[in-house]
Amino acid sequence: MKKSSVFYFFLLVFGIFFGFGCVEPTEFIDLRATASAKDIPLSRLGRINVTAASDMPEDGIVLANSTGVGVASFNLQTTFEPMVLTDFCLESVGGNSEAINSVTVIFINREGYTETATNYITDDFVCFSDVEIPVPFRRSARLYISIETASSWFSFSGDTIRLNWSDHDVESFGVRTGRAYDHRAVTDSVEGSTMIWHKTKPTISLNSGSPVGLGVPGFDDVLRFNMAADARGYVGFQWGEFSLVTHDYAGSGWNTCANLGDYEKWALYSTDDMSSDLVESLVFIASDGSNCEDSPDLVLSLVIVTLIETEEVAAGSTITYVLRGDTIDASSFDDDTIQVTFANLGWQDDSSSEEFDGTHIHTLPLEGNEIYY
Image 1 (cartoon, helix red, strand yellow):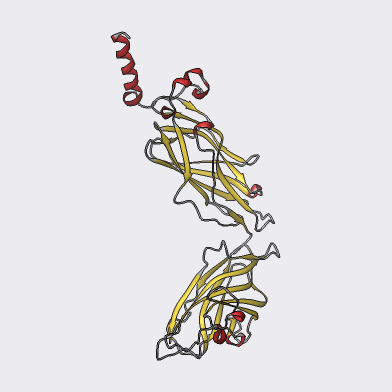
Image 2 (cartoon, rainbow, N blue to C red):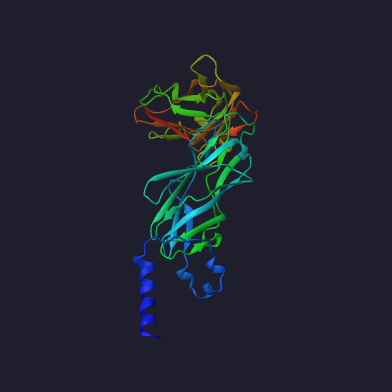
């Protein structure tokens, strides 16, 4: 090779990587499909790796007429060189996407400012074009996805929706080389959060009057909690699970299944009517997960309360409930203790008679205060 050829070759390499700044392609070329690409090592081809970000929203409930509901967050990182993502799509999985008015992606643009782009789901995909999202080398870019839901209600409470990262119609280019890439230069799929459609939802909170600190053994409050219904519809309260943490320092056995696992020792009231016990049936679970009937000597760890009838919390309102337990045999000399946590519930929203549990209620479990005797 002549000296001049060597000189221009190294000048070209130097310019690509250090001196020529941001080179944008004039047309899309799939370098990987060309004959010349055979001579390019894979380590010299750019790629965008997509992963779930640390601020990926929790799986949760989505209501009608909501804006800015976070449903996904993705990290983007490159290999070999900085890249610019220009076109990409998200895939709608789970159906009922007609309840989504629009999808918005939030990112940092090439000038360093926050930018948003909004589009609509068509044939299970929402696609964004000409967005120019910079993905730096050895660092990460972040894509945060939110939705706006329809103002009118669609009656499919309990169904799910998820927006996944997809390699469908992806285009990008290398900042230094100007190489253009298609879907083969990006992660094919990453799941977003699973969101559950509901017309309304309950919000559970600890009532300010819930007992705390010093208590007196006997039939008394062990937990007070509030249940609020969203303004979009009523909530039906059907059953509750209450987990117990107790200490029997005196060794009397007051907290065993044989003693505390007694139907007569528990009651649930609404503060609207403290004279009417709402309990229809009770199930007592021992510390090893067995039914208390089979393990009378074990410590009681869970009380499952089924209500006589569904308690309706009206839309936009709050009801306070009181759980009472009989701790008469707890020792006040040895400071025996009890702490109750509202762990789960069965509920309805007013668009369906179907029963749902508290899996996606982010205000559960609700930990009560410790009471010592």
